[in-house]
Length: 108
Image 1 (cartoon, helix red, strand yellow):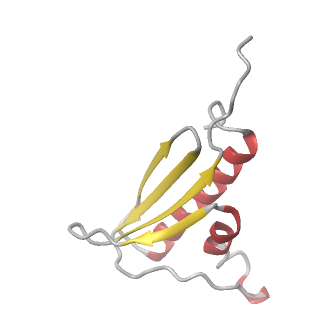
Image 2 (cartoon, rainbow, N blue to C red):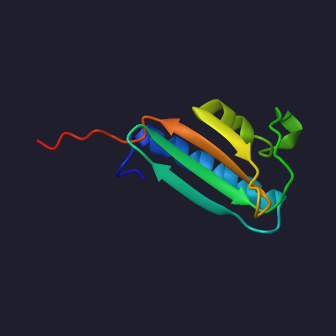
């Protein structure tokens, strides 16, 4: 992603992907699938798992250690995010979008 996106966008995307995949693996026991679409003005990443329970962001306390911050980070850093429930296959898709995804490089 770093060769196609501005460095700050790629860094945020990598952090948010890591958080969503970690949530899927920690809170379900059925794995996860990641897909991404990169357009001129937007990056959309989807993380699908097979558990029907919808994630709920909450503000972690000091006693939570490093747990509980994934969706808080997604809320804070993504330009848009949400949860979709596929009709046929079950489970859910947690997604986020980042604006300004493609870097404009000077080729001269």
